[in-house]
Length: 178
Image (cartoon, rainbow, N blue to C red; front, side, top):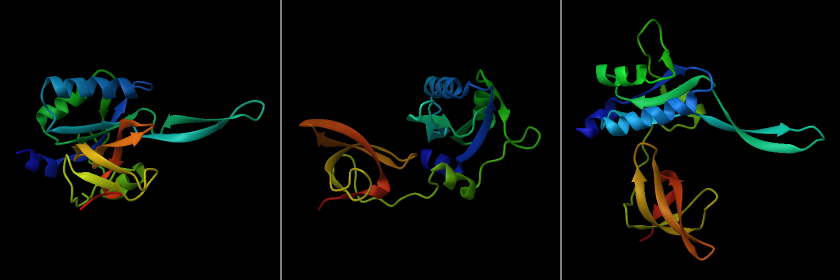
């Protein structure tokens, strides 16, 4: 049944009180867990971007800022129950869309947000030894501990400073070792 729901899940935008984005995300994630809605509300996201601020005296500081203050993105299967849960979360003022009808984001609107809509074909599973083929961990070998199909990431353990360290890596950056 979860397979079927994932096919229907789409990304929606929810408007929140300014400054409540992370609180809404936390509250929604608790509600999802308490009501066992993990197969219907798959992910709650507050898109962030790195911004370099120039301080007085010429100093620079890199900080994370919300890309869309006052908005939260939710990957969910839209039905009466999920709509009610999201709509009645403290800090949520409503879904973005004409009137009271929430409108899902299109694939083209998701790309600039760093959210992949197409699934990557994978050749590994939990317990497999994989090689990182791209990104900052390129050339590293690790063992898959956990996989998140919604985010299209795997958590692998790599040796860092002579310690096993978990690292989350995108599916398209790793390959199973034969």
